[in-house]
Each structure stands twice: as structure tokens, then as C-alpha cells.
Image (cartoon, rainbow, N blue to C red; front, side, top):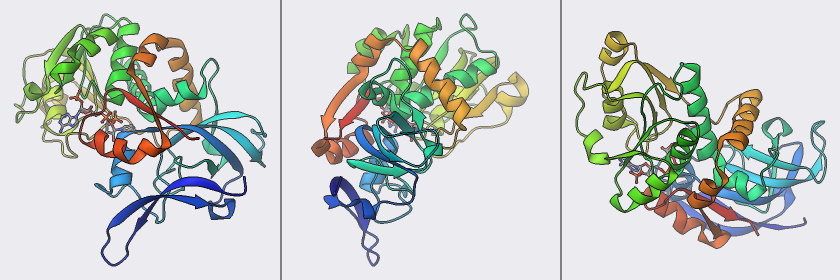
Length: 330
Ligand code: NDP
């Protein structure tokens, strides 16, 4: 590829204002890496919304091609594990933040960051899952390591109609858990029941200032929201239960106390998808291949063209996106 299309975020060094534009680049513009990839699909995650709009300082090098995940085809490689024609997937490792990212027809990264496209998935399906879905799987695996199993009791999922939440609800219900979905969108109740939620709570119920402890309501939780929501989730987790904290869609703070931890033995587990070691990534993707219902994956997915990226970034931050957005890089 002599030249290719990319979405580029720039910053005016005087005003610190960010701007974004579709730009034509050449391979010489890309950063270091031992694998060149033709990007077939990417996605819009919450973090991509932050990067494109500049609402939080996700981008730490300018100019930047945003986009934290992609599925693509290797064009050239000097890495021992990959050769031209291989289908690959990338999530995280600072791509789209410190290393030029996925919203580009071509990417160059370290082969150590890539995994082979998991068996049984097309590139489009892998990106329907994307970083949000892979993070949901990491959270499920973290709860399992704490002994939260089907039959332990209900699992609450916050930010349920979003990307992490939709995949988490689908996975947990398929694994036999009773799922309580928390959403601020009344018109998505049927959608969430269709994904397997047996009960739905209004977001407002969990966004009030938390008590030290509340009634014990669930055995586990996957939280995409943070802030008061996470604090309330902790205060209402049953004795010995576990909470996986994935996100900050409702805030970066955590106004909690030690009460859930020392009086009920609740565990709080942090989920960082970006720098997970490769074996855990491969395990998560093979669990997704086994445990995620493909019809539900299709039901949570909307596909958009490259030209829809900037609008989608604003929509996801406004809480208007349902499920997952796949971007065709054509
Ligand atoms: P989405 O925007 O798709 O989902 C977030 C959901 O949170 C929304 O759909 C909405 O759900 C809910 N929400 C939004 N704003 C608020 C608010 N102010 N108060 C309460 N709930 C709110 O984003 P993603 O699924 O892509 O990401 C979710 C979170 O997880 C983000 O914070 C993201 O940064 C984080 N994340 C973290 C990763 C990690 O490695 N730890 C990896 C991937 C994502 P509803 O309408 O149903 O209420």
C-alpha cells in the first residue's frame, strides 16, 4: 500500500484544542513495529469516544490515529509468529493512545501485541466483541476465580445496554447465571431481557450517595460505571461475593468505605484489558468462542462506515449507543 486513509487527531500546541480529520498517509508515517497489517474492521469503544473528542486525555501523542482495536490481515512481517496473509486481532497495548491506531487502512505494531484471529470468528465478529466484549469476558473469568459460579446467586451488570454491559449480560445468562441488568434507558428493557436479563433496575436506584452497607442483593457484579454506582454495588453485595470493576462511564471516583470488605468479605477486582498478558488474552478469546451466543452477538451489533466514526464518538459519550459498534475500514 503506497498511501492509505486514516482518521488523525491533532492538537494545537498553543490552545491545546484537539481537531480530527480524515487524512492520506504513507507507510513512512507509521510508528515502529515488526508487522504491517491491512485493517479490515475496527470498533467504537467508550475510550475511542474520549480519544476522538478529547473529552479526557486518552491520546498521549499527537498526531494520533485513534482506535484501540482492530481485526486485519498481515501484509508483511518480520515477527516469527506471523506471515503475510495471517488473520489477526489486536486489543489495547496503548494502540490509539500512544501508538498509532486502528482507524486507518494500514497499521504497524509489534507482533507481540497480536493474537491470531480466534478460531470460528470472522474479523467482523471479533470486532463485534472488540475490546468491550473481551473486557466483559475478563470480568467473568475474574468472578469465576473468586468462586462466583452459576447458582451462587444473582449477578448485577451496570451500564448494561452499553458494549461491556451487553456482552456481560449475554455471557452470564448463557453460563447459567441469574442476571440483573442496570440501565438508565427504559426503552432498552426488552433488548436486555432478550439478551438474558431476568430482572432490570433503573440506573437511578444505584446512583444515590451510598450507605455503608445495604441489603445483600447479589453474589457478584460487573461494573462499567464507577462512582456512586460502584459504591452502591459493593454495599449490596452478599457476604463473600465479588465485584469486577471495568469502567468509569459514570465517574472516576469511588466514594465507598471499608465496610463491604471487612464486614462481608467482599472482593473488588480491577480489570485492565490493555496490558493483559498474552496467555490470558488467548484464554479470554477462546472462552468467547465457546460461551458467547452468536445470535445474541448479532443482536447487539451495529455496523457503520468509516465516515460515521466522528458522529459515533459523540454518540457513545452521550450514552446513546446500544451494544457494540463495528466500523468497516474500507
Ligand atoms: P458504552 O458507552 O457502550 O457503555 C457504557 C454504559 O454505561 C452506557 O451505555 C450506559 O448504560 C452507562 N452509563 C453511561 N453514562 C452513565 C452515567 N453517567 N451514569 C450511569 N451509567 C452511565 O461504553 P463501553 O461499554 O465501551 O465501556 C464501558 C466502560 O468500560 C467505559 O468506562 C470504558 O472506558 C470502560 N472500559 C474499560 C476497559 C478496561 O480495560 N478496564 C476496557 C473497555 C471498556 P445504560 O444506558 O444501560 O445505563
